[in-house]
Image (cartoon, rainbow, N blue to C red):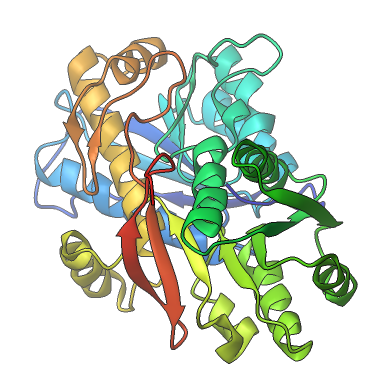
Length: 389
């Protein structure tokens, strides 16, 4: 998923050694796992929750005695949501820190920037919510990127759910799409929303903006004059909130539906106008299965987990790395990569993880649809695009 913007070449570093804290003693050298997270700047709340989820997973592994008789060490760099920072970080992780696997990030554009470096260094990378198909499959060759994986679904599936739901459930007849041109996540999601609308025979039209824009009244006015009765939001939460708020200020309330770029922070931007909007995510954050993680997060970090899905993603990514290292029997990148690729039915926190060898995507991951009520998301149903509804 997710957008990056801005520039800057300084590499923010956050190195974390999260061993068991004395309960288990290790004489062997640690197995080093890297993590790329946005810890400062826009999107920091996602990255901070991912870092924390990775920390909890490493703590649990070390409490069980580590892997191959060795402790795990987590080395996490602040990439500030920028591809140039991520490129610096992954080079340092591979060449200086000698990590054997890397978690993160949640930005499609960043994953595309680091993919060649991961392949050259032969270190597997698992993205959290980076949904562009090109993250794991090279669009120029059609071949899977051997060292790139993801834990979430892709834009084709997410985009199909958005269009399918707005058309079949909400009855949309003219679908407007607002998206960020030049952003990998937004462009990918837009493409597949439009493709699905075309397949379903529904008229659709795209309105563009650029990252950093704050006034969307011109696009909204044009879409209303065109006759749109529903709007697909193929962007991140900041712009989503502004679009929804400004539509309400224009006294216009079409059906809105957005993807996994949502954040609870959107309620502070959109206010009461957020109520009645629809959202899709790959996890149902209100499912009782997450209660234990929410409780533990508060106990460990002294605050509520506002982005529990990111925490769970990161925890489960680290669980996959631990499984792969144990399966491979060695802490070496190529062997870990092979073990990940051959994983079937690994039970992690929020689903049973099987890896598609052809795409390095998870197989059969469901989509959950939510409605915003009183500033919070309420789970409605799981939705499959081919459902006849």
